[in-house]
Length: 376
Ligand SMILES: [Cu+2]
Image (cartoon, rainbow, N blue to C red; front, side):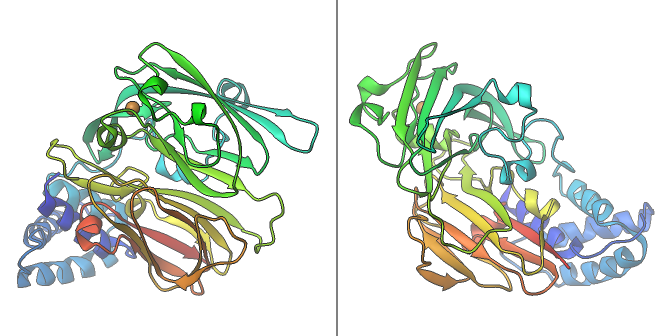
């Protein structure tokens, strides 16, 4: 993905957020969109014509066009295909999907099973497979990924402290893979040494206790490690505390910060939270005013040393690694190295549309930017 194109897309998304009215398919509107896109696509020099065209377009859009329409035209003018395919991975669904709760019961039973253990905890069994699959990382841009269960990030695994986790893992991919979990487990469950590699066609069963409570992650630990992570083999692992004294969360969201190296030069070309560049800019995350939104945030970004999340117009409690009942910070930005993660408790005081993004502006211009839509 060309940087200038994505920068232009960002500008357009910023612009169109907030305008809503009937459609305008007039040639005049199209030309304005095209011109605006052209003059705003240079992220080095600010062209005055960018502001002029957008100002004019803004006025028209407010009167005559819908957000979707302006967005589609602007994206097309810049050579970015209009929208994500409706099939396959859905980042909105991913936010609140754990233990395959997004699947209908019969289908869910193929991948997840709970058995009471008698001591008020559960045996949670998962059926996970590695599979090579092309995934969509920007509108119309496919990436040849290595996945767990055909998606990046992998399905989220969630248990309560003290539960037993058993994972039936099968490698249907083309390289040796493993599942390496952060958390307590015996050495032979670590999935990180050569003897732990699960070769194509083979299976392995991982078993360990859910401990400690917090927000964790899992990823392939096969070699070369950076390739196996960059290709998409990772997911979030949440362990809920047995005795929870934190405020009750009204809404919970899983966010995994990642990126993709599309030209194999060891640098990311597309950045995102939950894989699809600008997805939550096009499809804002709906929350309610004053409710407690709990975000389980994980950074798995390869190649870049740091990543970050900044949320506009609010502050949040940060529970670093989620392993204590008391927050360790009250802030509006967190910065993570790879593998670092936190639970963030956020409330929005005012209704409206608020941006969230990496505060490395390069990352946000290449896709790592979205919106919360706060409703009354
Ligand atoms: Cu692997």
